[in-house]
Image (tube, rainbow, N blue to C red):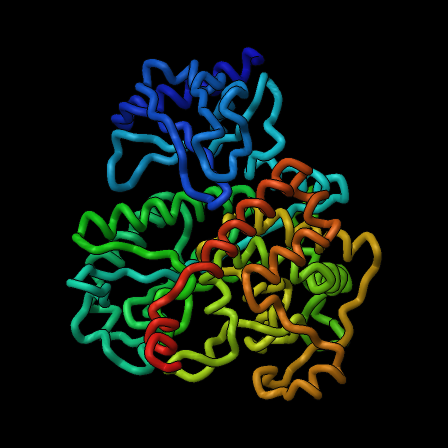
Length: 452
């Protein structure tokens, strides 16, 4: 380590001490994007930053190691230092995993960094904003229900009464986000009872992935403090909309920061540059494989249906296509252009792996000068199967099983994940699908037990 970086770490340690921090948290994520960590007294900060904290990968989901392998080490990123808003005695650090002094090939954060480096070599910075949808609920005997007894509308989207009833904990979350410098610009009651969304400023993809990882941890802790619980399950209620995590994406010039997706003279009238259309074409080419990562659970595919909620359409995409400010496409170009929104991603996804897959696909579209064709401005939900066939539009995978099969057969997956995580992801998610497929559900008992 250089003298300069040592000096910077000492300044960081001193700043944390001054703010009353007692413990530093060396945190990394498993395949689910969930935080795993060790906590270190600040007196051992220097050792932690050198990778002193070791972890047995075989004890975790999706950290592929045998029990006899050497432990992986967490190498904290100083730039990610985050003092916990709900407990200022602790500072959280996003970390990369190392093995025997080298980056561990199956580290989720390192996988994203590798694709970001490919973008940088092409002169691009990948900017990402993620819309966070989630439910806050309370336990009642035999069921989970919204916090507010008045949160019962069939169409509760944007309901002010429901938002005001939950103001105390919503305000605490928003204040915490702003205290961290995330710049929340709006929040609302979403389309499910007990469902909320916070929208905050975009950042480079690595920073945004760190923030989403921390956000889920933070919201759960704040909800728990109030006697409730937060769920990031994509579709907790069959008759309500699910929780997305829409990816809002653009490429910027690495030197100037200029948004390279902007074109006010766009002949397709979407405000998007040729580069942006090439990016879209790459993502559409690999959409089924990407879906396995941005919609990573059995439950995710209960969200990806055209109809199902009491509010009518689910607002989740099912077709592999793009359009202008039309929410029925997988990829949407919002009003004003300059960015692309992927609506298939849900809030359970691992942001490091999801961002890595979608960026790699977009970069391929740029390298190969792909074109996605004309945008779809019509309501895609109302198209017949014949019309969709004539337009050459296919559907996203209908189940996790289909998605994993697409992931396994797409060469992009292995090139992004590396051979170890590629195999691990397929094995883990295939087992998840088999376990679900073999489970006898209440629906089956009620339908078939006395039917025949």
